[in-house]
Length: 105
Image (cartoon, rainbow, N blue to C red):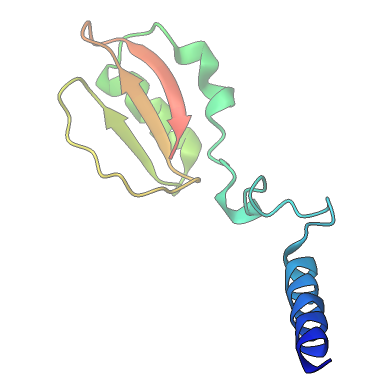
């Protein structure tokens, strides 16, 4: 009788513990990017510069339109940090010195 009671209590405890780990289907923690980490540098507004030479004048125009927001020009072979800054605009320059794209990181 004591063994049966112990087995019943053990089973009930195990089921209770497992139910605490069950997902309700509403858990989106793994899928969600915190709003503060969403890219917000406005890279899409500079699409007209793609293909243009990354001259001092063009870079100055992009910089001026950004105001005090962070920006960096990444040329082939440039060393860049791996820190993630969603408000920073990266100007990607190709081997020919032309702007090949913009990213937010």
